[in-house]
Image 1 (cartoon, rainbow, N blue to C red):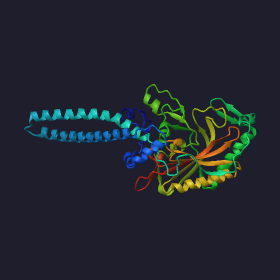
Image 2: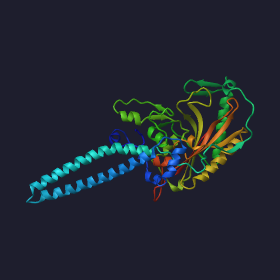
Image 3: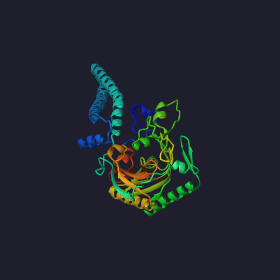
Image 4: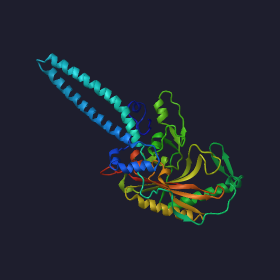
Length: 397
């Protein structure tokens, strides 16, 4: 098992460890039945029993290591006392030397074994999904619908927009003429609407390191869902594989968390309400139409709160309804079932519009509740008397 987020042992000597994620596995085990239902509802193949056994075995060995370290410390003290005596017993000195050697070797072997065991256990725990929110339904649930679904069938938008859309193979597309003017108009409309709702415009970087991508709940090793920039490093294979650069785009949760990772914010500054308009990049796309592009223009909203995050989720839902109603086209809002959620999502509200040509609904955006899942993994916390991790919400449209 490999991870860019949790690095220990020899690997930690070869690469910079940016964060050490906050892990409280025993807290999650307090409601073990609910965690098992969570795994089952998400249709994931995680063996919780196996992870639990390995975790407690690791804790047992950790206790043994502490005992050995204390024993070694006491032997050293006793040895120093004996050799200072004028009539030192040579047999006792040799016995202490032997005892010290045995304990030192056992401690060394145990530490080496613990490195691999700790890595295996902690990466498995980090692979567990977020808790499922109580409003996440067993089956997709429509909570809002505007206007009636169109009954007619139209031609493909690629055929209609033949002269105003230029597809770039294996990458994205360019909009021409009226299509480009429409993109500018719609993006300005969305941004003005958010500013009226007291959101602050933010600018992020387009590139994100592996540790942040994994901290947001996306596996980075052999994952084709993210665009990876391969940087050959013949001197350090660990860095080459686990500390890569990913083209995520500035309008993404990855980009926001690249800024807020390992960040302390005063409680008085919350809630944080930001948005970024820019590019969003995804891997493994056909790029045959506007529904499946590697590169897209997108608007990403980021909300962090240390109080009742549900209030902000409801306000954002109301904002989405008002913004899309004003467009005057049919759309619907759907709470998605657990099997359709990402690992980091607790609840997902899908914004869907109907394709007259494909005769099916297409997701054009979503509102995701992450709670403290991402902030705990990337140590984004509130500065106060005690450590508090902000609850996060993300919108992509």
